Image (cartoon, rainbow, N blue to C red; front, side, top):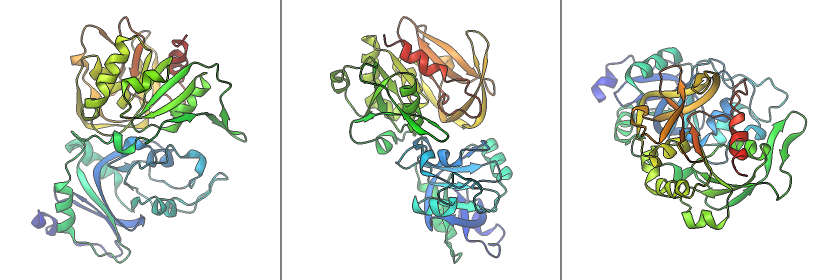
Length: 388
């Protein structure tokens, strides 16, 4: 593959960053953020806002995010908009250079913040061309690198990209999950007031399994009236039942659901057998599908953005949703005891299931993300309403 790299145009003057794909394709640009290199799968996100939330979403662990919106970083970053304290995306690719922020909520600039988080940025890239490449050929493995002196060993970077095993078969949930059980009290954020709080111990108790959760999910559970305890991904059934949950929530997260499901699915199956109310989002939804007897598979390019239309099959209502997933429940594999409740209007892929005769359901999208509309907040009320 070194010959493939050397056959491309030479490094342009001023290039301090590079994205090297496993097939030898090299994309030059201007590096920012962390000085160094990271390996991961290149995906694209079509959202116009929320880049800080994307970069701190644990579901992006092991991924390099190409932002299709050209102006990323222009509102800076702040501590209130973090989705998690653990690692999310390893790097990002953007079209325009990051300018000084213009927002009264900004506490820091995007570039230095990326550096503080160990995440590499690459600007000056034709992100439309890169996105088209991903759509045509699928999400490639790659290395993103930043060196202010512009010194890169391209053959070595190609080799590293080729040797990275990829996300299929990879269990990343236990890496990004919290290590200890924690109580959660914060409710949703409002301008001028910050984050609210829950009201008393009389609320129904939800045990949330953290496979790489976004904090805003827990905030919405609290807003819907739940008392939330968050537990690590590998928490056992006995440990969950000892907490006397009224219901169990299965969070989003990165990696292959079949890999994480090796330890999580038996727990979920036992909860369903006991008719404990269960609600899953994203990876949690996929593992609920596995627990019910369906299969999951890796998607060609995945769904990532804030404008994804999803049809609710019960009444035909279309929800505008936020999505971030590279695996999906195969809707042709759903057994008789599982009802498909939602489908993507982009490609018909599964976006929701419920288990007949049980209080268990899941959705593939992120109802907590409110990508402008708040079409899907009702799901938290639906779950908490089951807890009785």
